[in-house]
Length: 173
Ligand code: FEO
Image (cartoon, rainbow, N blue to C red; front, side, top):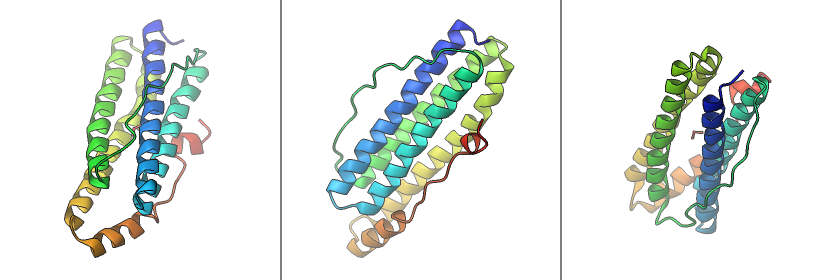
């Protein structure tokens, strides 16, 4: 059974993941409206992944006999100066999410909740990937800055990003 403290922290994380989804959806809409179709696709996939992250946490809370409490999702920005600015905010945001996951790990340790600690390992690894992806996108955007052909080609490449179901959901966990 989840402790009250652990359940509350997991519910806060569900809200944070949904906020992340909302943020990336907003970035996707802004990029689409400004003609950056590939970047819009990249963020649309990110939007789905964040919903998956929330789903993984929700499935887990339910599996432990806990209660999922969905709180309101706070407003997000609606416009960015450029795709590069959106990716810079993405990296900053993902670093905050990493700190939140680390904090959940700390609570699980304090509570001696080994099942939750074990579940969180996937997220610890996922955050390494999330930060790496955001850094990679910043580098790519900086490399083509001011170059119309490069920007066009990069956008085309990003249009090819495809969604894949994260392993905890693919396994039906
Ligand atoms: Fe749910 Fe982008 O971490």
